[in-house]
Length: 546
Image 1 (cartoon, rainbow, N blue to C red):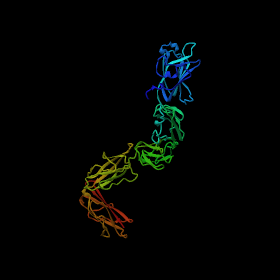
Image 2: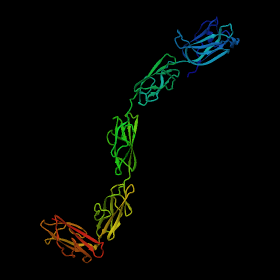
Image 3: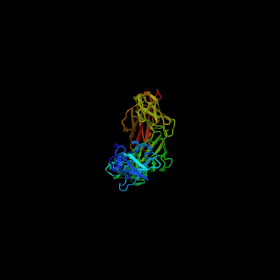
């Protein structure tokens, strides 16, 4: 704010009347000499006017009464007031701004804050004597400063949205966009000159403070900010067009899941769902469809096209939260749907497969419980490993008490000659257990054959593969007219074993009784049994095809 100075001294003055030589100008010379005063004798109200020669801000005013020059205080002005004009000097419109009544003081100083291009001291009652109406003062003056013609704003802000272009005092037209949820807005204008007056949509607003709340309709809203310069000579209008967006739709129109059923059934207004799947379901996908095709969809943070399946979502045992977020095209509004998928622990303790590092694992016949898996290895196999594979990869497997990963290889298990039992325990996720037994028979060296021939019409039949004492399975072919064959087995240790061919005992190196060939393919079993150890037995099989 500028410094206040005497704005009346030396300015043109006029009055409703005066007694010569006490003309109006003498009250503006800042002198308190008895002769330097204005004196008016009137039977009605009198006045003294000062033409300021421009628009000023009046900060204080005062009157020095003649009591200050030695007159009795009853001669001081009694009832008077300050009036201001902001209109034409030729046709003034006087406005009362400050009133004094029953004054007896010599000096009257009053603070005001008012604009004026002319001041008038209006005297309703002169001195306090009952029969007197004399109005006489030594000085009439006012303090203040000249007002500018600056009608510019220094800043302009909105409670929501951003002005486009950025504010500049020389730019008078702006645009702003707000979301649909913004139903009203305020405007904060700041004048370059604090004495300027501002209205927003016709309502007065103090510089630097927010306007009244302005209701916004959907679409275009015009807000007018009018700045009037301090000296009232200049008016400048700033216009803001605020576009309130139409309501956004962040609903889903549909939501499905690849496994199970949503509970409750989908409705766009419900945002929380549950689903239960079976233990063997390790992943699911969800397919969200947006009500607004331009909305953005994310499933667990990954963008998904409306109406298409999401990425596969892995399910842990227990509760799994899946979030579907719908965001409006402008990013201002979002809505989240949640699907909680419950996956129970698996009770599957089955083996899907069981193999061994040597020999061939033979499963028990289907539907027969309590029968072990079996395997036969040659005498030179001193240890073996097994590879169990669980039907459910989350199951836990132990081989002879040692944990083995599904599809992994166990530790080496030492084999004695004869039958060796290996225990495979499978524990499901829910604690269900199932035990399997593999009986591995390690053959004795004394139970092998040194040679093996198959004869058809006394002619040797070629074996495939070529005979080897540790190879136990062979095939051979004969003509379609051959009705039977004989077998000649030769033991490594003839005195230690008993040999049977198709159930008939045959001495080592001797020819067996004829074995009839039934159909196109006939299996012939040659069993070599140790005489010293009943558990040591080797079985050879020859399949003869016609």
